[in-house]
Image (cartoon, rainbow, N blue to C red; front, side, top):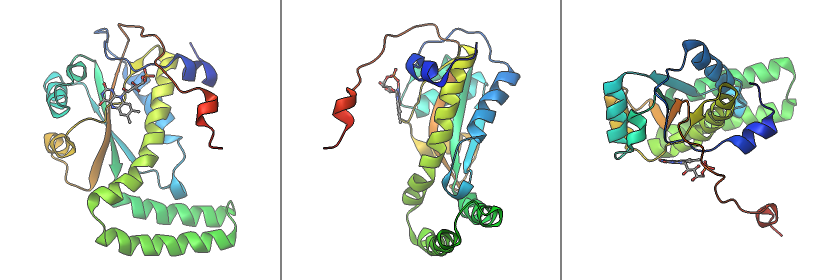
Length: 207
Ligand SMILES: Cc1cc2nc3c(=O)[nH]c(=O)nc-3n(C[C@H](O)[C@H](O)[C@H](O)COP(=O)(O)O)c2cc1C
């Protein structure tokens, strides 16, 4: 059942208890299709995903996430990564595309090109974690697209950020060109939690 954006936003909960029913390949592709439509700085699109269904791998992910056992009791875990190596390349080609299409004003393009050049040098000097955090918020937008689109299929998800990043990479034999941004369990909910506490709208406004 397709939900409106408003319905999806209001219906979403973090789900930590799942039915054993598998999630079809077709649905997983639809989730990734929602991810790839996310906006990103200079259209760099640094998101990459590993689809994990293997029981042993899920157990290891749960261990790397300090024993968050629901990661081993869900049909699929999406390991949501940032391609920090490819990010600068993605930025450069993104800027070129934006310039050619005339989407962005020439002055802004020149500033972006200058920034990209500076970032190249800065990134070579910066700690990996610092670079990763810059790239990661692009990935976070794509992950949230998945989270909301999942509701159209009756699926539940839960953002998981508490994990040992190096351990997760080690598990898949990845080097530090990838940065693991989040683990996202995906499955059919076996719980329906009530809405969790939220600030009132007035509390969000800075006077
Ligand atoms: C960036 C981020 C990291 C999170 N990390 C975890 C986590 O490691 N484990 C977990 O069980 N929930 C995690 N959560 C889920 C939050 O606990 C949850 O969103 C919050 O309690 C509000 O509940 P709701 O999502 O059901 O509205 C995380 C959520 C976000 C957005």
